Amino acid sequence: MSKQDNLFLVGLMGAGKTTVGRLLAKHYGCGFFDSDHEIEAHTGVKIPVIFEIEGEAGFRKREEAAIAELTALSGVVLATGGGAVLSPNNRDRLRKNGVVVYLRGTPEHLYERTRHDRSRPLLQTENPLARLRELYTQRDPLYREVADIVVDTGRQSVSGMLRVLYGKVDLLRSGLPSPDKGD
Image (tube, rainbow, N blue to C red; front, side, top):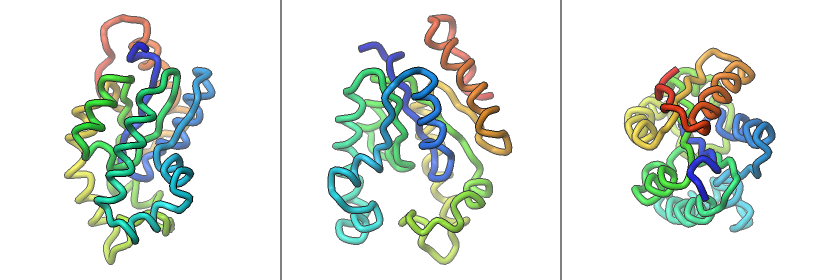
């Protein structure tokens, strides 16, 4: 398996990893996986229930097992959970086994996308925007550490973001010098 066989998407919740991941998989003729959906399918319960019963630590343990399994596959696009990069083992597996794309969104933009979503346990707080800012501060350096490509999700359309991504991924896969990590 070559690192270029796989595309792994990282970023905060609401960045568009699942939406973009499905479209990338279709474009490149790859299988698509979402680590959170795989965890739910394996356990038979939704992520918020796992958080409620096992806490974040229990969920992260399950997430690490799922990431280990999914990054061992070839020819896949994987949308990871927003906190997957918290584990050094996950970061190592992502870096070694695929091209990592960081979909970067500002906390304010992500808040607009997620504010009505009750299925995100980490945002069930008095001030979800403050929580997103906290998560961004904590995780942005980790996303950057593992990323081969960084794309801002900001105000551009999904189709515009995909055009940028296709160009960067194709360039990287061609063996030419790596594109800038940023836009």
